[in-house]
Image 1 (cartoon, rainbow, N blue to C red):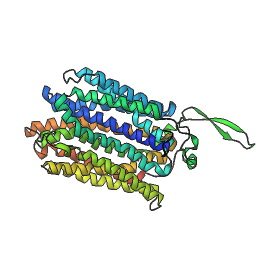
Image 2 (image 1 turned 180 degrees about the horizontal axis):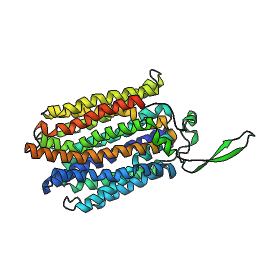
Image 3 (image 1 turned 90 degrees about the vertical axis):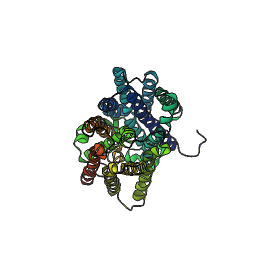
Image 4 (image 1 turned 60 degrees about the horizontal axis):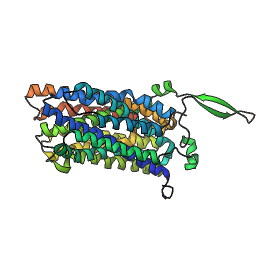
Length: 442
C-alpha cells in the first residue's frame, strides 16, 4: 500500500464506502429473507412490521453512545468492533419466523452493533478528509448504502430461491468478516501532516475531546492546560443541529419504509414476482448511488468555484432533493405497472440521495471536531423514523387489508407513501429556515 500513488485518505474513504455497502446488503437481505420465510409461515403484516422494526430499536440506542465511543476510543477501532459483532450475530442466528424471541434479540444486537458505524465513519472522515473534499467524500461513502441495497435486491432474491433464506445470513456474515480483515490490515489514524491547510477546520486533529487535556498559550509565552468537554447543551439547543435532525428523520423515514416494504408492494400491491422482475428491482437503489455522488461532486464544485456559499449550496441541494422526492412519493401508488412503480420509486430515492449533499454533510460544516457526536444525535432521530415508519406501515397495511380485502388496490398504499411525501415538504422548509454552512462549534 505504501507504493500506491494516491493519498492514504482515498483508501480510507474507499474502505468506508465498502463498509456502508456491506451494511445495507445485510439490511435489505434480512428484509428479503424474512419476508419469504414469514410468508411461508403465514405471519401477518403487522407481526412482520414488528420484527422488521426491531433492528431500529437497537440502532437508536447506540447512536449517541457510538458517537461518544468514536470520540473517546477512536472511530477506526469502534468501526472494526461493530463489524465483528454484527457479522458474528448473522452467522450464529437461525432464521425461523416462529422463534420470535431469538429473532428479536438477534435483530436488537445487529441494530446496536450497526448503530456505532455511522458516527464512527463521520469521526474517521472528519480526521482524514480536508474541507474542500468533504461533500464528495461523504457522498461517496454514504452512496455505498444505496449500491449495497441495489446489489442486495438484485442478487439475494435468487440466493433465497436456490439456497433458502438462511443462506442470506451466511453470505452477509462472510462479507462482514472479509471487510473487517481489510480494515484491520490497512486502516490507520491520520498523520498531522496529511493536509497542511486542515488544522484550522479540525482536520487531522485528535477528535477525542471528551476529557482531553489541551495546551493553550498564555501571555508570558508559556502554556497551561485546560479540559475540553463535549458541549452537549449547545449542541442540543442549536437550531442548525435541529435542522439536520429533522431532515435526517424524514430521509430515513422514507428510505426505511421503502427499503422494508417495497418488496411487499411489488409482490402484493402490484402482483409481481421479485425473481421475475430481474435487474429492474435494483434500479431505485442504484439511482440513489448515482445521485448521491452527483450531489457530492456538484456541492464541492459550487463551493470551490465560489458559485454559492456553503450555506446556500447545502440549502439548494437539500430543497431540490426533498421537494422532487415528495412529488414522486405521493404519485407512486397511481402507477400500476412495474415500469411506472420502478420509475417513481427511483426518482423518489434518487432525489432523496441528492438531498444528502445538503443536510448529511452539514455535520462537518458546523462541528468538524464533534462530527461523530452530532451525527450520533441526528442519526438517532433517523433511527426513530425507522421504528415508527416501518412498524406503523405494517399496521396501516393490516387495516387497509381489512377494509379493502387485499393489498392490490392503490387506496391500500396511498397513506403509506403520502406520509413521507408530506414530511419531505415540511423538512425542506425547516432546513431553509434554520440551517447554516458556517462553523459554529469550536
